Amino acid sequence: MRLLADLRASLLGLGLAVRLDEAMPGLLVATANPGLFVWVFVGASGRTFTWRRDDSKHPVDDVPGAAGKVARFVTAQAGQLNGSANDHFD
Image (tube, rainbow, N blue to C red; front, top):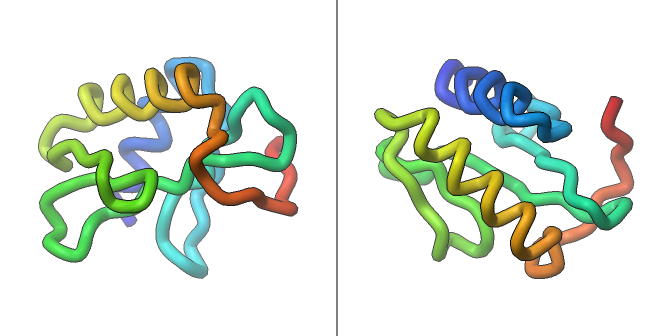
């Protein structure tokens, strides 16, 4: 949870809307498309942040780098390759 909280803080600093989901540990990162999000979680190995069907990863020991990659993905893809969410972001 600490790693996710650190990544959340970095993503918020980049101006993204992000919510930490403690029930199923991960981050919901809002996209430009209402109701679509990018789901970011710590991989099973505990060594990488992972998003988009397990093919996008970045080491957990580089939180700013991971935040930058997630932000670029969210901007470039607008979340179209990810699931939809009924949750609202504050």
